[in-house]
Image 1 (cartoon, protein in one colour):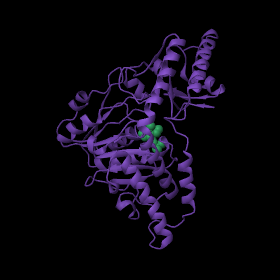
Image 2: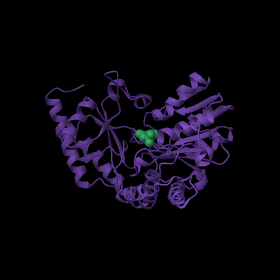
Image 3: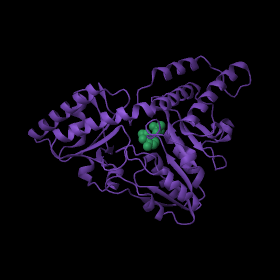
Image 4: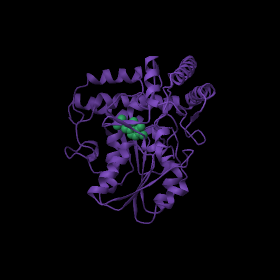
Length: 378
Ligand code: PLP
């Protein structure tokens, strides 16, 4: 299997798995005061230090959660349940968009979405035009999951905060792929997820700058300094800590090689398949992501063909009530619904080899010409 769906999830690193297995034996509750509990607590706090270091945060500003979705919800409901105006980019992940939609209904929040330009580049100035005085929250993702666009969080945050808004950034796809520094970026909230950086699924973190509102989504015990109730997922958190450390140690050395493989994949496919083009390639992108629009080839059919040949990729469309609906993020970039359904996302990791890239280019090229010769076209 050639796995090119790392924006969906990544392979658990063996060292992270080891930490997880070790933690399974530390069965005490980290809130218990006896030795068994204290050993579990130590694991959680060591992991907190590592996650904090990955993003340049004080450890006490890290809240462990069940993943990116919960982290986004925790930030948004904490910051904005009082009503007011919220500005988001039009290409946010559903775990940002959906809480905002709910707040619009339940709390009378006004949500304004600002689209990036056609090349996927988000102009800080354009977003900031929407941040009028009285704006409560700005949601600007650090990197987009579908085409890899990297957004100017630092610039947005500085100016939005100067206008009195809180700033949340979904850094789920950025973490481990580009450097993150919450002090430099000056954001109030930042969401992370372990399984996008070779950690386990079902664990994540929210950075919440000291003093910003954090209201537990589920009321309960006083864990995580009263910011997230519920007994901590000690094995998941321990593995997340190791994955965060490895991500930090490897990032500088490996990002260049990953980008070179992505570029080879992209130029290989664009050369081999007439009418193919890379979405957002004109702007700053994550090193690992390439979203390719195949002019006349349905993304879903191509995905299935590639899967049969042992290549795992994904498409931007989502199945709802039996029909494929095009990705709102791709539509926001100005793609037509038909084109948005013909986008296939290839997302690499440090484990992707040059040989796999060569094979993928050959497989995609053959699949495209066979689909065209059979008139399996959109
Ligand atoms: N935010 C972004 C940008 C994502 O890509 C994802 C996952 O695909 C999430 C949030 C949700 O993270 P999790 O799967 O940990 O809930």
